Every structure is written in C-alpha cells, then in structure tokens.
Image 1 (tube, rainbow, N blue to C red):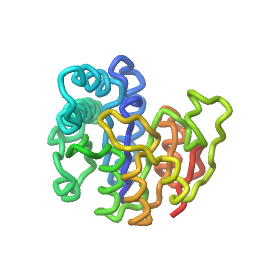
Image 2 (cartoon, rainbow, N blue to C red):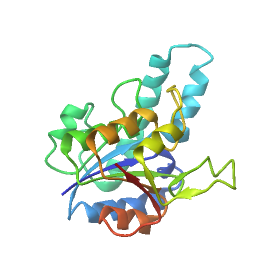
Image 3 (cartoon, helix red, strand yellow):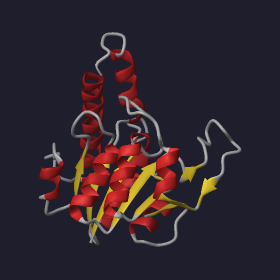
Length: 218
C-alpha cells in the first residue's frame, strides 16, 4: 500500500520538538504497514525568508527557490526524527523509485508542495493522498479570518478548483493550490484534507477510517 502525505510546514514547528516527536512516532508506526511518501512544506519559516527577499527581487522563480530550500530543511528535520534516509529525493522521478518510506521537500519553482504530493500520488497510483494542514478540512472561506465559514465534509474537485482559484506566487498560503487540484482531478486521486495536528484524524486517514476533515470527491 502506498500513501502520499503533503505535510504542511505549520505541522513541523522546530520550536515544538515534542509534537514533532509525537507525529513522527505515528508516521513511523504507519510505515510498518504501508509505504509513506511524505512531502513537507515550508510554512512560516519559508514565508519569512521569501518576504525578506521580496525587498531585493521581483523574480518569483528566485523566491520560490528560497521557499524550496525551507521545505528541504523541514524534510531533513522530519527524516531525522523518523530515522529515515537522509537522501532526500530532489525530484519526483527519484522519489517514485524509492523502495522504502521517504521524506522530501519541494522540487521546482512554480508549484507548491501540495502539487508535488499530488503529482507523486499520480505517478505512484497511490492508494491515498492526504493533505495535512493547520485547518481541519476545506471551508467556504478561511475560518481563521471568517469564523462564520462553513466546513465541507466532502466537496467535489470541480467545486474545490473554483474555491482555490488564486494565482500562484512564492509563499502562497491556501488550503490547496489550483495546480494541485487539477492534478487530483486528472488522476482521480483519492484525497483527504485534515488538520495534521489532530493525530487521531491523521492516523484514521492513513488507515482509511473515519476522520475529522474533508473528503475530496473526484
């Protein structure tokens, strides 16, 4: 069984080693039952550097490269906690050749780590694609800004594409970016969105059980 996880950078705060240890324990346990392909985001760490660099360049490609380095730092941190290989795949081609569970970060400018995860799930014909973020699913709007936003227990990919119709730029912070949505649609990828800090929901989604989050219908 192959499961791809897009693990948001917000789920790996380097100042909270206790939580990193807890999520690592869960993932390491699951890796005994399935092959995990974990793609880490850059989170706040990436955005701090990207925002600083914007004072010196308007090149989104250069800014994306900075963000990609941040995702790889998070990948190395998680690989260390998991005691997985330090050989972080730099491309999707290398990742699909892995015979054991792996952790990786971003790959090329112009796409999010969600898009990397979706592409990886497509290439692997993965059983599941899990997007673990800091919100417990997809909402009609950002619930951190609009408390009245309603959560979807399930949402069709076409509707999700309309919700996520924001132009890409380095450091974009959305629940799922449009490119990732299109890949999910193309591959009819079984996708789940949840709060990665809710370890019970993450565990349930890994094992295809009922969880608190949103099911993406394709």
